[in-house]
Amino acid sequence: MLRFGRFLSGLTLATLCLPPMLGAQERTVVSKEVAVGRSEASLRLEFSSGDPLEIALRDGSVFIDGEATGAYMSGDALDTAWRALLGEAVSLDDGALSRRLEEWTPPSDLSGDRLTLATTIDHRLEDALHGPADVATPNVSVSTSGGDDAALVKALLGHAGRLATLGEALGNVGPNLKLHVNEDVDVRAGDKIDGTLVVVQGDARISGEVDGDVVVVDGTLTLEKGGTVSGDIRLAGSTLNRDGGTVQGEVVNVEGSERDVEREMRDRVRTEIRNELRNEIRDKARSGAASSFFSPLRNVFGGLGGLIQNLVSIMVLGLVGMGVVAFAPRNLEVVADTARRAPGRAAMVGVAGTFLLIPVWVLGAIALAVSIVGIPVMIAWLPIFPLAAVAAALLGYLAVARNLGEWLGDSGYRYTDWIRKSNPVYTIVGGVAGLSIFFVVANVLRMVPFFGFFRGLLVAGGVLASVAAVMIGFGAVLLTRAGRRPEYGPIDFDDAWERSVGTEPDPDTTASTHGSSSTNEPGDPNA
Image (cartoon, rainbow, N blue to C red):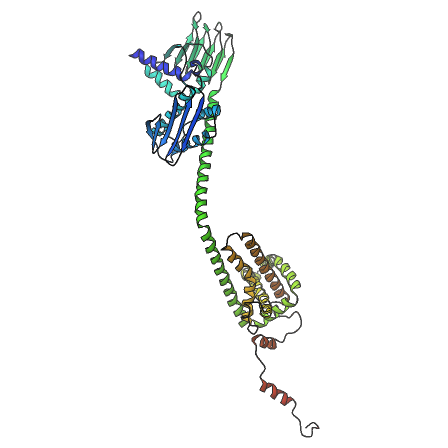
């Protein structure tokens, strides 16, 4: 029984480590069937030999050639990786398909039963692609430290990560093999080994003759004086110390392990990137479907919200204008008159004043901070100056709006008959509404599809109109010193106010005034 276990373990190690010796030939895939659905992802391959292979993940179970092998969960790492492989297999044929199926590896984040199941799928793919081995029984001599099967199996399992390196290191070796695992080997002077000497995880010292190749994996090879190797020396993760020995072949350093690690990392990164892109595309598709469903309602509600915002803005500016009319009518009249008579000049002054606001604010604070007396004033200057600038811009904007409202009242346009020039509050509200008409129409078009370009033009026009009104009004405020100094001569404010509110002169007062001024004294020749 012990001999049978040793033979079985040695045969397993030889099968895994010596693929070039086994002569297994890659089979040709003559047809493939890929089925991917909500609860199924299956692959069926037909080979030139006639025997098929079918691997299916269906309804939480994994079937290999119709036999239930294990279970999975929809959307887990195994399901995602298998569906990704099938997605690539759809567009591949012949050799490219075989190579991609052979390169597939289980996801790195699997563990436990899921990892075992994924490894089983990987092995079945590789076995089906390479087909049955067509070899003669090799003459393999196996030796391990401890001399029992457990040591051999333990060394095999602990060395699983280096199997690819072993395969490359043992390429093209002869059938006669002396395999030593986890033990040191000493070929003394006068001794001779016929065949290939393989030392895994051990050191080898050669003073005699090896009629074949020498392969050392994860160890040290010492070739002493008088030692002879008739074949090649292959080192995988090992070092060579030569002391006059003879090598008739070549000394080859096999770095398969580094390439395996690099390939594994590359495959892992590629898998992670593929999964991340797939999840991102899936999320975007879901969000796009939801957004396409709610897009019309979103546009309607957005347009209504914009209209409400426009109406609130007009109402707020109208209330502010009412306050200005009540408490500073003379200042408003002077600024409006200047903006009406010289809008270009006022605009240039407004632009220049806007650029100078921050320098004047900073220089004023510095000048006040230089003197100890000015520090309290500076504390008030810092917040008051920006507030004064905002108030000046608002006063100028309302003055321009009043001029626009008066023009609309005289224009006779439809829906402007409610603007009465006799009431300055009406003219201010009408002017603000006129300046906001671009934004109002843009919000109306927002509720209608296919008008995005025109809506953008209207918004741009509204912004330009608002900026022009602010610049002209702010420049007029600066020119008139906030409406305290008329720019174009004195203004009869009483007469202007009476005209604005529509007050007619009292006929009796006018008659008595004229009568008293023309009263004839006795003796007047005109009496």
